[in-house]
Image: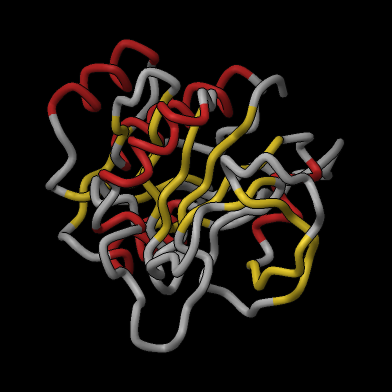
Length: 209
């Protein structure tokens, strides 16, 4: 992956964002990183979440913000509830993509390299088409009644079945289990889903975004 991939967590930053880390408010651990925009490349220990492992394994160059939770600053002017700072960071760091999570990590929004924000409908549609292309989409996609018409049109054109549920990830999960499907989610970017039944030829497909 060329260029930095940017991730934002859901706790307000107390200093400048760092590189080579991923935003998360999950269980912290220490890693080496450097301050974004600093002329120094000296490593510093920073508390970061497990998403660094995922993005690092994908070869991403990371720039982060909002990765210093103190128990009171969760979702404070950052993360998926306040993605404006991530949009600015993606542009400033010339990243190809950015991700914003909420405090408990079950919501994610994306920002593309042009600074455009993408919600759950966009992300689910992209994942559904990718899984379909790889023949790993098991059945259709479960979404809620809040899903926009553009998503429904896109799935119809792709020949992907869609079932709509009441708002709430538990309703999405119920349909996934009932139909034995592996992809679903909400426009708000709450993730739902399950792993693939099929023998893995690599990593299992993503559940949803």
